[in-house]
Structure formats: C-alpha cells, structure tokens
Image (cartoon, rainbow over all chains, first blue to last red; front, side, top):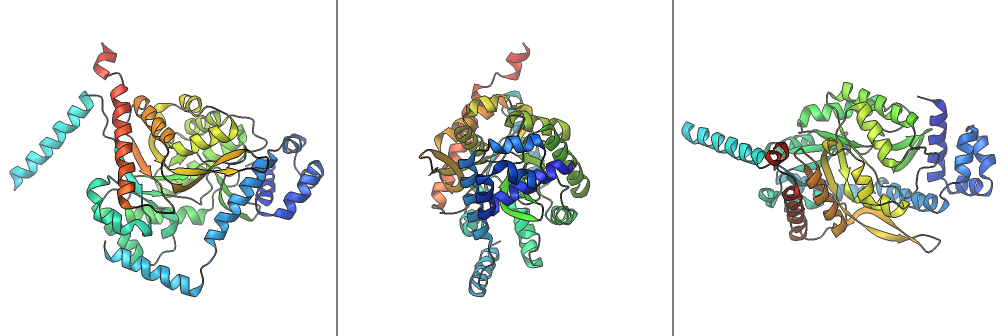
Length: 90
Length: 310
C-alpha cells in the first residue's frame, strides 16, 4: 500500500499514544507533520485537526491500554481460577 | 423415533416456508460471551439464540479453553468476532494474526466471523484500541486488499463492522457512508452494522444517524451490534458520546434496529454487547427481548413480497 498512507497512520498512532508528541504537534502542526515526511495535502489537513477529538480519543485509548496491561501474579491466578470455574459449567 | 424426526423436520420446513411467505426472515438475537456472564448465559440458553465470542481471547488460550469453547459451540450457535487484526490499516494485516484466526475458525467452526474497519497499530506503535483511518479511496483499496488476504487465509469472508470514533479522522476525503460502501462493494463483504457506533458518530460529528443509515445498502446488512455508552465532557464544555459498552442499550439504538428490520431484506443477527458494569441477567434478557420486539415491529412495517410483486 502507499507509503504516504502508512506514514500518516504512523503519525496519527504516535499522536494517539504519546502526550509529548501531541504537545509538540499542537504547538507547531505544520513543522511536526513535515518532519514526519507527510505530503503537503496531509500537512494541511492536519492543521485543521479536531483538537478536542484528538485529546478525547487519546484519553480513551490510554484507558483501553491500561485495561490490557499484564495482570499481577495474584490477579492472573484469580482470573484463571474464575475462568476454570465458568468453563466447568459448559 | 424416525417418524418423530421426520415430523420435526417437516414442521421446521413449514415454519420456514410460512416465514418466507409472510416476508419475515428468521432473525436472531444473541449476546456477547464474557466470562463474567458465563453462569447467567448457560442458565438461560433457551432465551439466547446465539453467542458472539471474542476470537482474540482464544488465539493463545490453553487447549482446554479452546475445547470448552468447542463444547459451547455444540450447544448453541457461535460466531467469532476479531478485535485486533486492523483490517482497514494501510499496512498489510499480519499473517500470524490471520493464521491464528484461521486455526480458531477451523477448531470452533462458527457460523461466521467478523472484524472492524479500523487500524490498531502503525509504525510499530500499538494504539490499544480501534482507530479510524483517514477515509479515502486509498484506504478503501488497502482495506479491500486486507479483506482479500483475510478471506484467502481464513477461508471465509468476514462481516465488516463500522467503528465509533471520538475524532473525525483527519485527511479524510470521503464521508463515512461512502467509505463503508466503497469497501463493501470492492470486497463484496457483508456488513455488521454497529447501531450504537452509528448513533455516537452521528452525535459526535454532526450528522443525522438516520441519514447515514439510509445511505447504506440494506441488502448488505447481515448482522448488528447493539450496546450502550455514556456522554463525556470535552474540554470546551461540549459533550461526546463514548461507546464503552458499560451501559444499557438506549432507545435511539432500538429505533435504529427497528428501522433496519423495516429495510433489510435478509435475515438479521443481532448481538447485545456488554463489556463491564454488568447488570443482572434479567436486565440483559430484557434488552434481548426488547431487541426482538424492535425487529418484529420493523418487519411488520415492511411491504409484503406478494403485495410488492402485485
């Protein structure tokens, strides 16, 4: 697929997960987008980004990642036992 | 014994023929399988038509868990739902993940499988959830190529699902409905229409969910998700609807469900999704019953085939 589309998705992925990258981008969108090798058209589109949506999406993704974090050994054991109990019914 | 079996088959055939004659396809309503709900589900299999299982939970599961899933699939129809393939990514979907899905499909033999039109990773970064790619002809082509690869590896086309997004994807040149229609026609896949996602995107990005809905070809809709979410405050004081699956299905979703049943010609599979803050099983069963009722009301609004032909 087009490397330009790949670059744009990679740039967005960084904005979604990295608060520092978001702050730099917000302070100078055109420069940051150009640094990422994005096309003129993509840079222009990013200057008109939905900033509020970006922050809200980033917060929501962070919560999801938090939920997916590896469990402690105790929580893992508890989850396994609980799952075993549920599957015993099947 | 044989006579009873023949009678049962005949009765089923008659019911099927009657349903067809009355222009009421055989719709089903089921529930997303979650370990926290397992006991309640197993106690009420007679009131749940099918279960949707998150496929990714079983990609690296121990053998006994996959065996348990197979046992479950022998008791009630099961469908598999993927959440991490990233089929609408501009990068090719990872072969390892497709192989895992193919293996699970082979083991469980579900009625169908589905995945989201989303990207979940790019440039070596895992976003952790479903993100909307920029909607453009290029991302339609990329999704179609991934769907082709998925079909070739897994052995069956997935139903593709629209996602909810808090940010309107930047650098988009197409509306969401045009983008989804482009993917449906270039991949020839069916649609798993998430009605709460339609509602959330409409409210968050300023369009009428019903208008979006009217732009989707009804014959492509094979299944639907229903769920609930909550309004969250934006820094500017406005609110956006978060599709968190932690709340009961709101009335506008049931209204969209009724609308779908009035328009879609084929049989519909509806799955109630709940991912946390679990209510009582009675509450979930009541929402399933309300979904059945919305389907029936929508079907009743349809013009009978006989009248349409005459």
